[in-house]
Amino acid sequence: MSEAPKWYVVHTYSGYENKVASDIENAVENRKLHDLIAGVMVPTEKVVEIKDNKKREVERKIFPGYVLVNMIMTDDSWYVVRNIRGVTGFVGPGSKPVPLSDEEVAALGVEKKQVEVNFEVGDSVKIIDGYLDGFIGVVEELDTERNMVKVVVSMFGRETPVELELDQVETIE
Image (cartoon, rainbow, N blue to C red; front, side):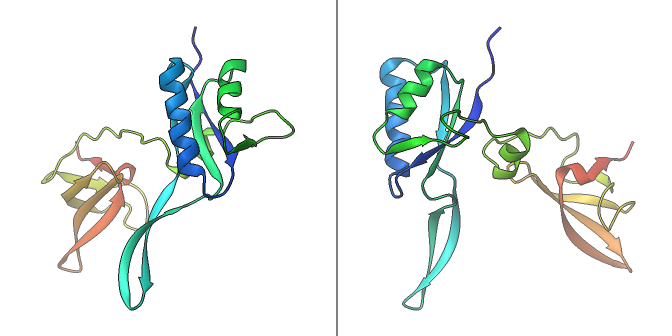
């Protein structure tokens, strides 16, 4: 039985995150460690910066100095990652790396959960969570990447579009 890889946090010199990530990926390729190290990620977010009265969208590291590695922890995989230039160690007490919990992984959004929906644009749905619980509406937009659905609800005689998470609505049987 093979175990599933878990996400670990690797501490790096600040500014070396992308270099460390690509060096780990190269090591995986060169040493054929795909079965031990499944992925590497530098979490970033898009932010709008205003500089010299000009708006620019830039990608900013969410956790400067850290790289996330999805791996099965063995002596070999630990050794490979630990000896990448720029890596100062794994996050965890002493020298024992501690994997992120499922909740932490979900909060970071590092794993995209593919959500299966049994409704599509034009279908009537019932809202089952939130302040509009019990309302019926029609699906106007569906965005499974963002886990969002736009539902048009009739309130006070007006059509009102509402954006909800996919699990806040269900099909009407």
